[in-house]
Length: 210
Image 1 (cartoon, rainbow, N blue to C red):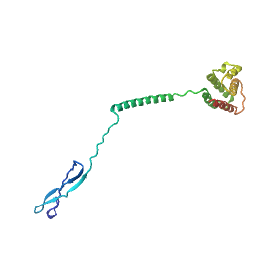
Image 2: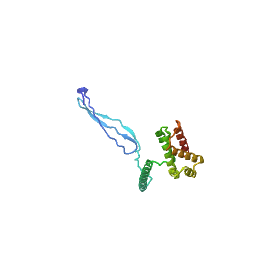
Image 3: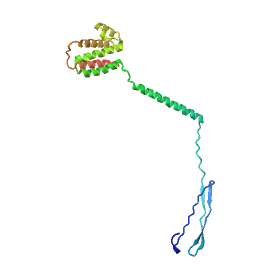
Image 4: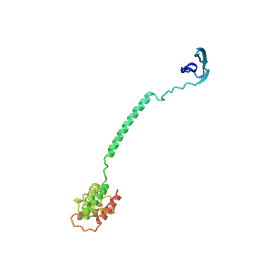
């Protein structure tokens, strides 16, 4: 209540919780509210209006059912876990395998060593020939089991001739080894750029053999 006398106002609040029991149309009956009018305490009554509301069908409860038997789900889970474990093992083995450097072929080694020799010799023909003899000798040993150190020029030519190389390649490789072996022990008078041109010629042949 607020105010006094003819300005006094009294408010009453009624709260109800409605719980539907069935779907369809529901009726809320009128509610009678009695009161006393001040200041002479005259009795009075207020009646609320009747109301109708529509009560919807209850929402269906969501039931999670599986079309697979429980035992089958367990088997799939176990097999799946085993598959994941096997995949992890395979991946780990592959990574370990990939981490191991792949062995280079004799031709690949020749090309790598030529690059290093070209840089080290810096155009010095004698240095280049000394290194080239070593590179070609190692190639013949690893590829054909021919060791030029143990053969004179004629025996070397005959041994290389027996390989599966083309006739032109046999002749070039034999000539390079013989000339390089000579240049190791004699003064070499070469024009500028001869070492670079020879390196390019040797590289071209071995790139063809890849």
